[in-house]
Every structure is written in C-alpha cells, then in structure tokens.
Amino acid sequence: MQDVDVVIIGAGSAGLAAAKTVRAAGLSFTVLEAMGRIGGRAWTSSEAFGVPFDIGCAWLHAADRNPYYAEAQAAGWTLHHHDMNVDHLYFGKRKATEEEEDATRRADADLCRLMENWSGTDDRVSSLLAAGHVARAAATFAGPMDFGKDYDEISIEDFRAAADLDPNYFSSEGLGALVAQFGADVPVELSTPVRKILWDVPGVACVTDRGTIRARAAIVTASPAVLAFEEIAFSPALPDAHIEAFFDLPMGMLTKLPVEIRGTRLGLSPFDDLLIERPARHDIYFLCFPFDIDLMVGFVGGDFAWELSAAGEAAGVDFVVDRLCGIFGNDVRKHVGRAMMTNWGGERFVRGAYAAARPGKAAARRVLAEPVAERIWFAGEHLAGPLIQTCGGARLSGETVARQVVQSLSPR
Image (cartoon, rainbow, N blue to C red; front, top):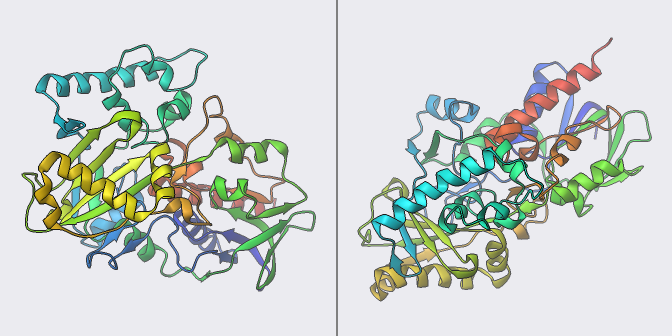
C-alpha cells in the first residue's frame, strides 16, 4: 500500500473514469474496490442464459452525450435504438382499449407539463396525480420504472432536473461488458473495502483490511446508501450537511426478472414494450425478446421491488410467470425455461439501484458536490447533473470531479 496523490474508492463507472483522468494528468493514484470485480452496478454475465445479460444497468441513455455510445460504435457492437413507448398496455388481465392507450399517452404529456410548470409547496409527484390530471399508467414510468421510487416518494424538483434521456440504445454485448472494457487498463485493488477515512492528518488516510494508504485527496464513489449505513467511517465526522445528504438521497429499486420463453414469441415482436398495471402498484413492465433472444425481461420498481426482493427469487419468478399466463394463457408454462431475479438491495456494497432525492431534499445533490476540506470529494450517478441515475452520467461525474481534484492539487 504505497502512498499516492489520489485514492479512489470504488471501481464502478465513476471510479474508473476518475482514475483515467487523474492518470492523464500525471498524478499517482490507487483504486480500492470492495467487490471482487470492476464495474459496480454495470455487470454483464452470460452465466444465467448462455448469452450476455446485463444484471445491472443496460440502456445506453442519452447517446448523443454518452461517451460509452461512441465506444460501442467503435467496437462494432450491435446496437438498437429503443423508443421506450408502451406498445401493449394491460389493466390486470384486460388489454387496454385504443381510447385508453390514447388517454395514457395524453396523460404522460400532461404529467410532464405539470412538473415543468410546478411551483407549489408539495414537492411530491403524487401531489400532481391526486389532482386527477393524469392516469396512473403514465405515472408508472415517471415513478417505479424510471426513478425506482413510488411517486409519493419522488421529488418533483429532483425529477424535472433530470434530462430527457433519448436517444436510448441497447447493446447485444452488454453495457456492463462495455464498462469492463473501458476499465480494463486501470489497476484496481479488488476485494479491498475501505473501512475508515481519516482526514485529521495531512491529506487523507484510508484504512483497509490490507493496510492503510495515505493520499493528498480521496474521491469517494460509493453509493449514498453505503455511506448512510456507515460502511465507511470518517474521522473526524463529516459535516452534518453531508451526513444528512446521504440520508436525503436514498436508493430506489428497480429489479429485473428475466424469464426464458422458448418456442413461441406470444405474438410479440423483438423490443416490444408491455406494461401490466395492477392494484397497489404491483405493476410490471416487460422488454420483450430483445435482439430476438428467448427472453421476456420483466421489471418491477419502487416499494414493490423491495417487497419482491424480500420474498426471494422463486416468488419473483412465479409472479412473472403468473402475469404472462394471465394474459397469454396457461400454455405459456410449458415454454418457460431458465429464469432469475436481480437483487441489488442485497448487495452490501451497493444497497439499491440508484439514488433519488426525498421530496423537499433535491438540494442534497448540491451538498454532496461540495468537497470536504479540499480533501474528500464525492462522485457517481447521484452527482451526475442532468444525467443522474445513468452509467454514462456516473462516468462524466468521475471525470469532472477528478479534474477538480487535479486542479486543487496543482501548485498555485
């Protein structure tokens, strides 16, 4: 454990980007990663289905501003533009009428307009729905399927600060694999969680089970939930505003439930979007047969995603199969093959999908964007400006913060 100019905590998209930026500036660095691999929430695996599948983030959002998109093109990867419009809408087992589908599209536009023009005191997205201006189906994407939170837990101010993420692309090879390729040349100390950061010493000292490393500055890319749970202790304690900000940016949940459907396409086309609205927000969205592979990829979000995570994978898979049978008939069961459920809430060093500010607490992101004593800096998807909650945004955050650190450490 040699002393360095900058220690970077976390080897996800933000941490890898920060390392490359620091290295390009000629500073020494060490990257410490708690997990046994790089990529963080970007993770592609072929283990479950024999083809690349993104356990974590999958969409190349905002391709016109996303550095990963150009790299995917340069690598010759298979890309598909995904318009994110709902092709098939069901209320329970009943298919929506054309009039209901049209009404839902209008409601979606109404919701966007209401949020854009909002100037009230109730910062919850649900306050707009309570007025009866929008259909709940439209709000499903604005809430659980977008922010990973139910709409009574989403800040309007925080939501409308996020950019429109179109154009969105999917890659057959996997976004996680792209991030792994991006970071392949970055030296990383894997399976090395940081237990404590001391900053009452010259610079900082990061305490790990393998020893202590000193640096002039630290870039912390751990999720707010990891920091709120005090997986990393700080001595002395951080300013109260920073500690409160960890709690004001709780992690939302978006859980994937991919199910292999063999020998039939159920009358659906590759990349069709299917949304099933159910009572009590037990909604589920399907990305149908991406790249014409035998997968119906289910998504559940918000409180229901946490609930299914607690119930376990078998219960989650049963829920998905039951929903498909309810629409397409019980013969679907004979076509069901392998299945799985992601569980980011159970990953100790992540604890959720991505951060969403509590209503009235959108300023928490600005608080965490401020360094502590010009020694401790924070970066990640939660600090990605208009590209919050995206892998590309995390990378840009890491690069931006690293440039600030380089400037701070430069002779004056």
